[in-house]
Image 1 (cartoon, chains in turn green, blue):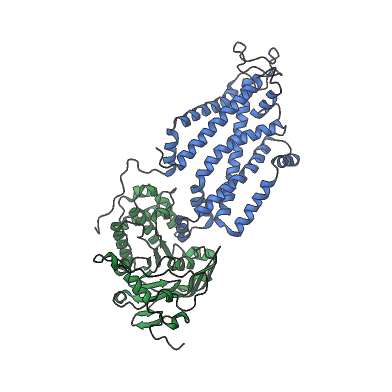
Image 2 (tube, rainbow over the protein chains, first blue to last red):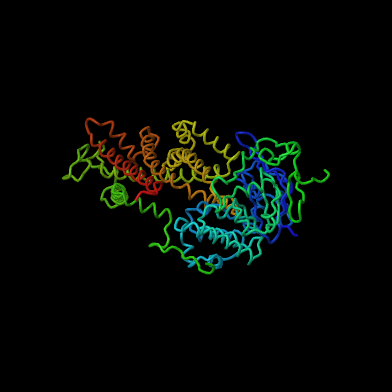
Length: 322
Length: 296
């Protein structure tokens, strides 16, 4: 399988008043080409920072490792080289459409900015392209929409525009960072459908960062579970839900409320995710894990293949001779 | 719902920016409208009254030296001890003061906004160095600075623009830098960066428009402040020079003859008061219109 993005040994550190925070720790991740990969995990598990830092968008004090994107190592690029890649080969869809659009610029100007940053078109050509684009994300009357300001549009419409801006330069990879979290449930479905349509028609590789396991089940080809700045499980979606391997994935799944459940049957994961201001010995999930063993607090488990198409980092499964 | 396109909301007006919304709220206030009318009238008379008058503002009326306001003689505000018509001189003074106020504020806003936005957006070491320079300039006594400038560059009205602008921009730079620090955390800045927009374009197109609100409000406060500062400089003999005049010069001259010819102080001081009060009301109105988005 070909990769669009291959991350090796990624470390992302932040300097804060409480010392150094290791938001992402020795992370290895393989994002397959032309597929939708879901990245799930609790808040603060490093999902967003992993991707922001690769493209020079994070406020991190230190980013190290290797990340091969489309044949080049992203982390070795200069700022201006990265700037050329951003928006052209890769684009982002952010969580809150309300805050991802500049309130003082009309929508058209913001779309044109995206187009003209990477394509040498004349203004009328760019306007024409923008209008086509808005139609393709099912916005009616694009000419009128382009003259509007963000506060005149609904959340769903704003997110459509952001999605439109993300696909305008036909990027190879789209990173959608919780694209539906800030939206109504009914609009969520529309945006997810839109993302799926784009994936089908352009066969773009998509990384979908989300809290919502339902979204993963519906949309993603692959699932990656992150915990404490690391990958704990990576799996093909068709098998993921029926065959959860890592205790954290199991706990995550058990904590999802279901319709036919009593309130007493909710299973929150006990304890808190670790604070990443010091080196963690052993498995980061060990303090909360129901299957914790002696080895877990001593030795860090490595990612191994535990079943066909499933990798997990857990001592429950026989670790290779290392 | 697959193929039903969403239609845009059909609101009454096609496209309204936040600026337009603020402007609408702004001119709805009666106090604001009155200030605009008064100030507009004053500016109009100051700029055209002097020009269409048969007399020049420094013409001497030998038959009317130091007389009080009188309509029969045609000296509405009276004359000064050189026999010059005070009405024309007040108009001329108002013209100069307003010009200085506007230009010096414009210069300071231009420098302050660019400087502060760059410092705030880039942050880190750039910010540290740029803001320490501001601190050092802040610590310099204003009068000392102006005298220094005068010594090196000679007296001229342009120098006053420059000197006042050079002092006012420091505060604006600080305000703008603080604003830029918060704005750069916003998602739309990250979004613009993720698109590949170069840093200076981001500052110009995304940072600056979003921080102009407080700057505009502050600017309406700096215009009167600059006018008063100019008056102060002129009072010290460092500002506008005879026969050219400004409100500050007139007030300082008038204050020396307060007992024998009180009108020489009252009229220029009254004019200055009107200008400053109007500008302050406008500033207040702008602040309400820009920041209280729920106000109707």
